[in-house]
Amino acid sequence: MALKRSKWSDGQVVVLEHHSSVLEGNPLGDPSVRKLPVWLPPQYSPGTKRSFPVLFDLVGYTGSGHSHTNWRNFEENVPERLARLIHEKNMGPCIVVFPDCFTALGGNQYINSSAIGRYADYLTRELIPFVDNEFRTRGSREHRGCFGKSSGGYGAIVHGMRYAKYWGAIADHSGDAYFDFIYRSDWPNTLDTLARYRNPSRKPGVYRLIRKSTSTKSGLDDGRVKRFLEKVWEQEKLTSSEVMTLMNLCMAASYDPDPRAPNGFRLPFDLETGELIERRWRTWLKHDPIHLVKTHANNLKTLKGIYIDCGWRDQYHIHYGCRILSRELHKHGIKHRYEEFDDTHSGVDYRMELSLPFLSRTLR
Image (cartoon, rainbow, N blue to C red; front, side, top):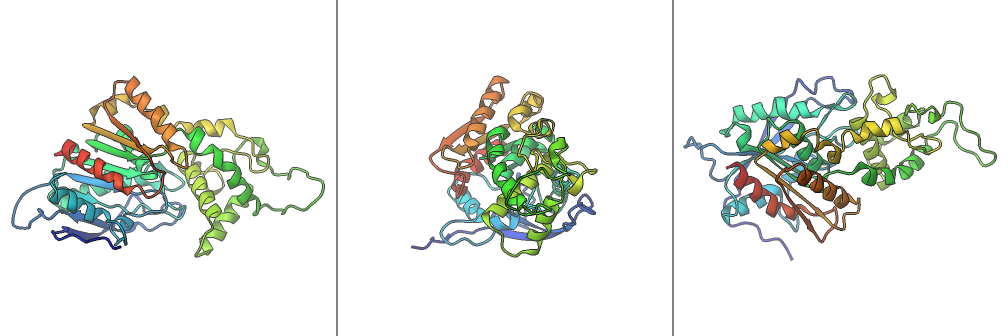
């Protein structure tokens, strides 16, 4: 069986090059010059002055905007899905931007971090005006939205909270929430992976805490994180445990950056004993959407639309966080739409069938 490709116009993907001053000199040495794919709908004709709403697609961890415009075998990519939805009159034409926010840590959470880079500023202060200047956009927040899944879903809801002056509506698919559930449970595996880079290495026999243990509750690397990063940055292929370890380090760099700390960030667990470092974990929780609703309720109320969904078999248990997030939104009188469906965290791009028309209706 093969996917039947469209018999209508798919629009056009234009790839621009953007030179970012915000990302220049970022601590990971990631490029500040990036390709920026932008999808223009079939209705975007050079012979007219018609302007269009704009959507920003925030991809998940280890992804890049390019991954959503690439050809796929048994399913549509995002431009193909958009073209079909518009052809079927399920949504109106819009411009869609696919930012590249990939980093040496596998991605980021679309927030500013001294350990990774100012990716919130990159989106809001640079890419928005850049796109508005290059294309016929309806250049106001009432006609601009963002959507994403997983880390991208987190980025969408957090931007709706902290950067509402730039966005009129957001869609959050399975976005990170309820950090006590979704992150804490995997840190023992991360600590085991990092233990392979312990110095001195472990030997059978009597166990003694190494002299420079993080048992001081400082959350500082004793060298094993640095050695792990240097090793994976040399490899072409990472194991699943290495990817998950890199992801947890990326989260630490996002939620608890510290320029004075080794690698530029602190860790929420003692590397040797595995004990939770309460002070460091409290810093993480300040970024948890379920705790941000109260302080950003006024911003959220200015949004024209909020869409959230999650599979009730999500293997990272994000559906529990989404339920709490929805409850907090209700508690503070914030109108939103929350849905659950019978699926996991993986392969759920088909949920854009609901979120993209939702954003189109809201932002037209």
